Image 1 (spheres, rainbow, N blue to C red):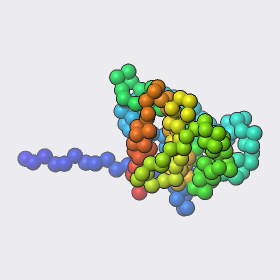
Image 2: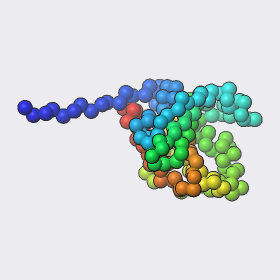
Image 3: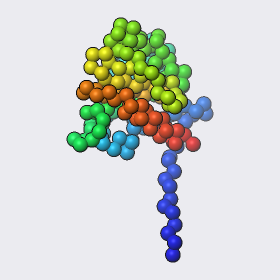
Length: 188
């Protein structure tokens, strides 16, 4: 008898509203561990709007302007014999709509990064070809740490980790592409 092909798993679509905005919790959109095979996920940490109010002098205005709903921080630790940075930190924030997520990385509402670029503390890097989403990539001028920030629909996503004297631009570019592909797979 011939073997039948193994069934392919159909991703469960992420819930969205009528406008196409994701409606799930931020933790729903963090990288699944299988996209980071050399890493293990820690417990993660909620970053609700109260966190924004405590950590931004303009927190109320920021929340009103961007429509931020909630956030999550997740750390992934590299296995001893794994490749990549010592750890990867991911932040996922959910906004009411894509315009709010885009505003969150605008010069007006993300001035700490743009001011650091202007001051030479961060170097803005060339964008990632083929990513297909609005994004900002920078490197810390003193320690080489890469930060990759992107918007996908109404999500803001940050990926970063320590440089340890290694240029991890390609690592984070591939990770960003994997994240976007994974999100797209769950849209249909």
